[in-house]
Amino acid sequence: MLRFFRHIRKTLMEQNKVRTYILYALGEILLVVLGILIALQINNWNEQMKQDRSERRVIQSLILEMETNIPAIADCIGVLEESIASTDTLQAHIGPEPTGLPKKDLIRLLGMSIGTSDRCVLQTDVSDELRSSGNLNLIQSSELRRKVSLWSTTYQELKEEEEEWGNEFSTISVPYLNKWISWDDIDYHFFEASPAYNPSPFDYDPGRVLQEFEFSNILNINYWRMDRIKDRIQSLSDVTTELLQMLRDEMES
Image (cartoon, rainbow, N blue to C red; front, side, top):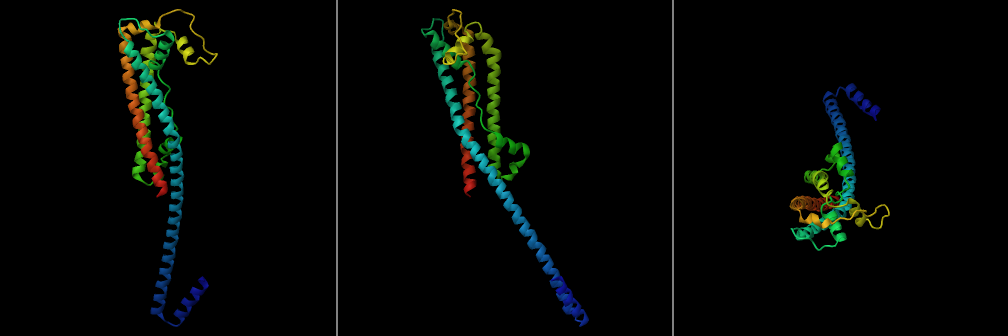
């Protein structure tokens, strides 16, 4: 092909057709420029296709992660509501008079209300990797990127609240309750099917703690903390549902 063009140029120069040659040369330059532009456009298309495929893989991974987290969040709310209900029952028996609750029932209520519930542990591998690596920018929708960041922030706020609750349990609740209840009994009544736990060998009345003014304050503080955590989990549930719907809409678009 190049030999063909050189032959045309040589023929035109030999025939002294300068104007024709200039027009031909301009046409040849135009063809070269056009070829470069076409090559660049094809390269851009290829890069865009690669980016689109990467984005879809990221979105699909996030969908799977959020689909896993939604029932996990529901379980977290359920466990916390049980603890709040146990606290309501205990508060109904707080006062100077002895409670009529059986010892076993009281120990279970104390374990459910004062002890910190299991932390709300969710799947975060995909969202964490996107934020730490900078690959969050693979998602082209700015609104969707914002929602993914909001999800991570909301979950972090929940973990911080749970951490504060755990610190209060270790520094306030445990030292106080050590005088009134047996942790052996709490473990035994929660895990009766496990041979690893045995009841306390000591005879004591756990109901006496319900007659203590200080315990009433501890129970109120613990209730306040659980209520805050429930709000955090509910916010996380709402954000997760919204994010999952946005991800699914993006996959279908």
